[in-house]
Length: 262
Image (cartoon, rainbow, N blue to C red):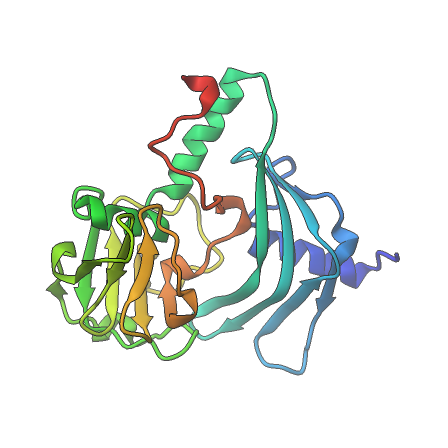
């Protein structure tokens, strides 16, 4: 495998935009040679496309996970609003083993920060009746047309608040639910503040605001925030740009402490 300068430049972009950090020790790929990069300078705004020829082995020292990731599609491009990123793939998480309680406490704190204000956090508050107390507000009236971010979305919000008990219905099992929104949704989280200047930040854009359009009758999810019909949902705004450094496994629950901390 030959590491030419173009490949090295592509890897740096991959680490910055997709992984979420270029700082040594934060997050690293053990087998970067498994990534196939493609750059199309003839396509306006195109920064990088990538897929993986085998499982990528990623170590996230910020959250304490080893991740095996298969990237089917990754496209990063620049448009008039900022950076847009589309990712499809499969990820498997395992805990980094350590005997240091101090290290585990640090990981747990970082995991809570990554979870706070996330889409899973939002879904988990709905059946618990804690949407407002956890800092979320839900509104109707936004037009999300396809997977791109809409510059007009902020102006098209109709500030009509929605309470979770008006749009939530029980599912087939006691731990499953249907979210039946009256059209499109806007969700904000007042406590989620970006840690630093985000490469996906947009001019005059509130990074705490997300826009959702559900193309079926309802969004079907469980009490752990796992969505059963993600193909029926289109999203833009804050939630769309999750980087690997902030990714948590589906089994993560902030209410369940690490066994070493009991």
